[in-house]
Amino acid sequence: MQTATGTVGQRPAPAPPSLRTPDAEPVVTTDRLTKRYGQRTVVDALSLQVRRGEVFGFLGPNGAGKTTTLRMLLGLVRPTSGSATVLGRPAGTSVAQVGALVEGPGLYPYLSGRDNLRVLARYAGVGPGRIAAVLDTVDLTDRAGDRFSTYSLGMKQRLGIAAALLKDPALVVLDEPTNGLDPAGISEVRTLLRRLAAEGRTVVLSSHLLGEVEQICDRVAVVASGRLLVESSVEELRGLGRLVVDADPLETAVAVAGRLLGADRVSVVDGALHLQAAPGETAAVNRALVTAGVGVTGLRQEARTLEEVFLQLTEPGDPPPAETPGRRPRRVGRSAR
Image (cartoon, rainbow, N blue to C red):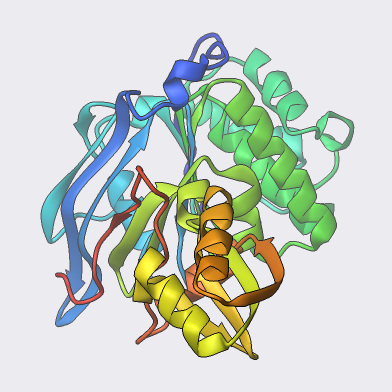
């Protein structure tokens, strides 16, 4: 299914840096948003905020409730309880300012890309001049006369995004925009999403692809089984880096590091001391170990990947991710409902 909505007018000006700060006004807000089908809870008391001018990633495994949440934001599905506002109004009432692509572009295979957009533009009351503009935005002008059925998956996805941009929306909602694409198609869509963000639009995208979120998004919400696990910037989500220390005696090093950083940030892997520590803490760790008579033969900082954090959040029994000093990701426990 493909939904294309938005507002007619000039493209929004590039977002100033202030719009990517925590003080930027929220464009999307959900408050304990919940959807149940019979006894099955698909979205479970979801509360989050999307700020104006940012690219917000909705990250989770297949079946996590991402698409259902986006459908509720678009007014396509009615929540069981809780509420959502989009652009300051109840979800589903701001369709004139929202462009969306949900579950792939459902366009006519026997029509050209341009003719597909003409059909949608006529239905939405958009002038023909807008068609050329969106084709240029998604880099499909040269293939606009070809049938949709001849397009690659990446081209089909880009045409679907062009349809969502027909009314020049302030908010663009994309459900798994790179799902099923080959590396070239993923690169095409990623470049397009960066362009939309540079134009000053607010973009909300759902994905189960960590690399996509890591390279594109400013902030991310991680969900599993319909529940919000954490909402933060990508950098905050990565949290503290990993400091690997070759030390002898290891038992003494573990005790010293535990007193300095806390036992929850200390582990032993393959005979080496692994610490969740920021780069600025390296000198203090080294000094404390040496003072305690521990021989330190190696010290190296390794950044955690988003994949590591994601697996920690979504696999039962794993500890929560480390938090950046001074700024903590907003985290909701798995047992919370």
